[in-house]
Image 1 (cartoon, rainbow, N blue to C red):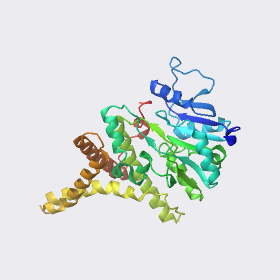
Image 2: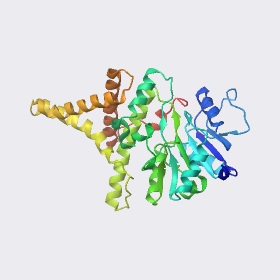
Image 3: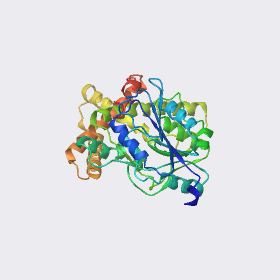
Image 4: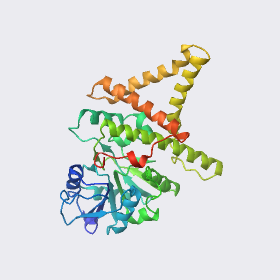
Length: 344
């Protein structure tokens, strides 16, 4: 492609430590066509497991540096027009990511960020396969569950920083990612793009493999997501009272459903034991349970239905109670517990 002759791309990966898992991802990054540099922004470096290659640059940062700081630091250092962001446990399926990106950005100048599906790799352990299936559920990922499936290319309201391509100029036109935010910093970045009137695009060609979490790490992730839904709702309500400009797609209204479930369960139990003993008050939870059964049947594919159903049900309840308690300020410090498998 003639338009690729003078173009290159830099890959940016924020992480805490290097490991065999990270090294497997790096090997895949090195296959990317027109690759200029892979920046590994890292807190703890094991010199014995580093991959030595002229296209790899390890940038050591202070402990507890957040993802936004790490990404912005590498983005400023990059010498290419195009930047690709991945997590330490994700990597592209197709090495032609630059060619795909250029076509999209040239076709519509209003597109400021490009992403695609991040799907499960093959040959994972049982519960990693299960958590991968759960991510495809509306009850877990909401309307954004398209990111876990290869579906039709389209304009969207949110992407994911584990599979993201942007132009460096556009990235810093938006002031990069907010370094005051510890988690959901990519969601904030996408919201600012939409608020400025620009677009996000999901390409079915830009596929990334993203390792699924084991059950323990997945529970922690969903606990954190429950907290974030509460914080997003609180911030949204504050904006309404301040008469701040609201952008369509800026807030995910399904967040409201997350704490309502646990609130309903607690209030139903209270009514049943202290006011009146009528099982009809539990009828909505029966309907909800039927929906979970149908959803488990839809997403289970070749996995055991009962394992998928019970895990899905438990995770939904846990996330709901985490959200409800977060409204009252009861929550763990997510900086100490939120990790992917590479950094755990």
